[in-house]
Length: 205
Image 1 (tube, helix red, strand yellow):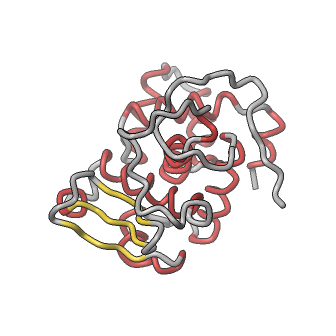
Image 2 (image 1 turned 90 degrees about the horizontal axis):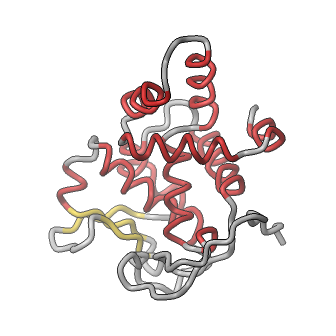
Image 3 (image 1 turned 90 degrees about the vertical axis):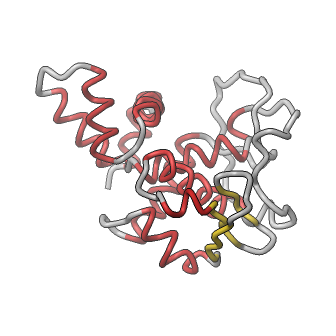
């Protein structure tokens, strides 16, 4: 059985959306995302993967004209369902993150939640969950790690340290370079800064 990793100093017990799943720390999710990306190489693109390679992980893509959410992962039928609007505008940063989030559900939660009809629990959960045991938080962490790969972001950090760039310059540079929102880039930076030197070294090939 895999060792369950949870942040020792995480005390939050606020109401966090999502199903309760096996606890995973940020670094554990980072490792899962890193292994996933290594399988598909440097040229991984979330839009291409969702449209042409989703069957590699045992899932199919379905486009819906009636879906009320932007997207949903149906664990029972092994489908990622996108609204027509998201599918037709996959290049937009918000939609790229939405798709990567659903991919995170498929990669991380299929075995645990195979009896669920979907993962759209954002508005219905009333349980007190710690972030690291929430399916939604975990999928968000996976999405950020896939869209802003660790080693690529680290390379940007190194470049910025040798220039006069300020914090917001880095955020917008990442947002533009990786086609994500500034909010996503900022959260990604905060996550990576929390990794210990030992954890950081363990992620570098």
